[in-house]
Length: 143
Ligand SMILES: [Ca+2]
Ligand SMILES: [Ca+2]
Ligand SMILES: [Ca+2]
Image (cartoon, rainbow, N blue to C red):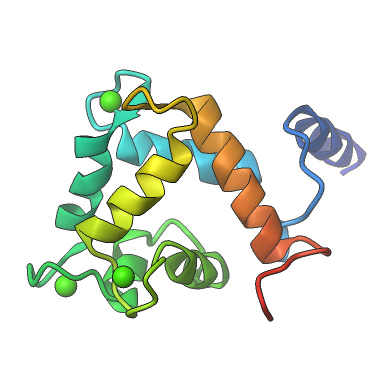
């Protein structure tokens, strides 16, 4: 028990984590799974095409829109208390569904050096900042 607590503290410190996910879900595991899912050719970075493809994957009824239900079904590894707020976050135009256009907006925000490849570091930096805003004690998620 003691050992796992120490281990958790180390992981948190290594990634500069200053917040806790609901039910103490592990941030590193979450980010690794998300990145691995997006990096379909396993090249170590995410191209814009790969990022857009997630819409095609998640869109179960192929109407071009990913609803919350479709998103949560596709992210079944992610607990609903995380995927719910994340879904809203990845809907920058707030129309209640994810589209390729939403993904393009997000991709350009995440691709910090604008070279058309999203590295794990860029992905982590961005996601940690957003997750902290959503779940951190000093969050500004408008709750
Ligand atoms: Ca890739
Ligand atoms: Ca759909
Ligand atoms: Ca949208």
